[in-house]
Image (cartoon, rainbow, N blue to C red; front, side):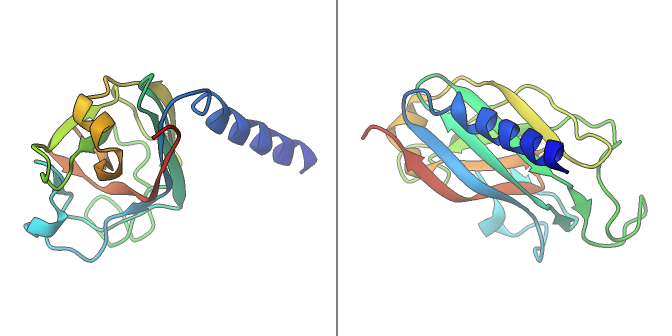
Amino acid sequence: MRRMLLAAAIALLGFAGSAFAQGTIVRWNDVVGLQGHEEGTPNRMVGDMIPFPYWIWVAGGKVMLNLDTGEVHIQIRNVSWAQNIPGGPLGAVLGGYPFDRRGTFVCDARGANGGPEQTQTEVMYLDKTGSVNYQGTVDVLQICRDYPDQIAFVFGGGRTRYFAYGVAREVIGPE
């Protein structure tokens, strides 16, 4: 048990440490799944991305984006079906499906300042528990730097659909 706690503490420090090295950080303190929506709901569109039509549950996560370096850290835990579907019962994890996923940062997500525009991570896959731990870089668009409080994070497949999103966004760093 002590080793597990030590490993978790080290992972958390690694998750936060390098991204906070310098610059402006946008951090989402949790990640949640889509629930209680209709597929065509315009208020759920983020840029040109539409919500996945099925209900999804996520145990949690964190996302950080360094606007100066483009460094990204994404941790999402236990993505599961929140309804019965043909592929599995309520509570079955999405892990094991061979579909590629991407984290997408939608800059000026409401389109109030000339956007929206988006940048994405490389392809990543959920593990067998429906979880992902990703560290990489993205090209940070100028509109993201100009309006860091207007960035939305969504997670899903390709450029068209998402099934989870970041919540409790904070902008940390130089003004």
